Amino acid sequence: MQKTATPFAQPFSLMAKPIGSQCNLACTYCYYLEAARRRGQKGNVGEIHSEQSQNSELKTQNQTQAQSKDSQPSANLSPLSSPHSPLKFPLEQYVQQYIQSQTAPEVTFIWHGGEPLLSGIKFYEEALRLQRQYAEGRIIHNSIQTNGTLLNDDWARFFAENQFLVGISIDGPQHLHDAYRRNKTGHPSFASVMKGLECLIRQGVEWNALATVNHANVTHPRLFYEFFRNIGCEFLQFTPVVERTDDGIITPESVKPEEWGEFLCGVFDLWASRDIGRLFVQLFEAILANWLHVSPGLCAMGRNCMNGAIIEADGTVYACDHFALPGYELGNIRTSSLLDIIHSPQHLQFARQKMEGLTQQCRECQWCFACHGECPRNRFATDCYGNSGHNYLCDGYRQFFRHAAPTLDRIASDIANNRL
Image 1: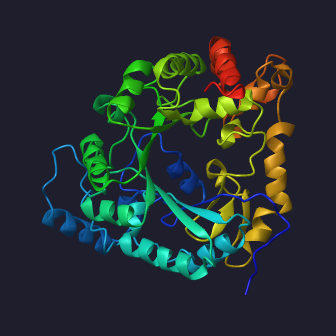
Image 2 (image 1 turned 60 degrees about the horizontal axis):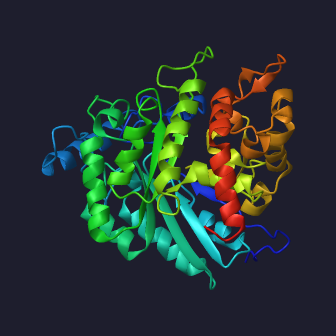
């Protein structure tokens, strides 16, 4: 039996994608679909599954047709028996190795997709059984990220009974959310998402929100922020959409650097004026951590890329969700131990490259400590010296840091002196 490793003092995080990139939505900006395409896979449920599976979906849909007019066709898939069950995912190997590779007394499992609810409740019931089997006294936590369209009272009760933290993807008010978050037939998803959120709230499930900032909502920072505040969100994550075509052209859904900077300034001012300690905004909290010279909880703002690994549906481990691409494989838990994979030379080199790959402009920047060059996936621009590999969003971040620095200095001082 594999023993818990002790030479490594720091626990590590691994995001599991048991359904891979399969999803019942077809969001215009989704980078998972592009990554799946480059790995020779498909990511939309309408493309992946056999005619038999599709007919099963339609039958389930027709039996439960009490949906609003703007809901997507597959929103009523039964959570107890799904045609999309990830039969190939090495669940027991993953659960056993992930628990036994940790040194901390508490272990958190992160379930992601695609759309992980396509796996069905039975899959997660089996995951919980295996977690209990291999826990050996550890406290186990579970979190799951969903687009919200498949949530119903059965799912909500299951999450409540098993104390799941549920992340729900919402891009803001209906007209902003539905701009890009639609299914493959073009139906919008906002109403279904909000119905799903109501189920979570009704059952007392702890939840947070994950939003993308894109061309549709980037010019509406107040409307965006007030929406999440008004629906009772207490933990908000948002990430900029920066996607390119095969020819390297920025896609229409993406944000421009100056738009990103203006958006950050607008949301920050609203947050700092009344919601510090009330509404946790992940990006601002991570930047504030850097201001205090402590490790942030967001890999994009950290000094290295060591804590963002993922495991795909076939058991392959990649260093990062944004680099789940050919050539970036670290290994497969079917043939290698998870501990060896995570601490492999390839992973360590990938982690170091974030700082080693900074451009000259980055190294000289007074704000480098605050963002550490941000996510490497966005480093395709040219710096002021003509060096390639500069962050596309740099001008936006510098605009934000200049604007927010006095307030961040004050907040950091209050924290350091126990006034906050």
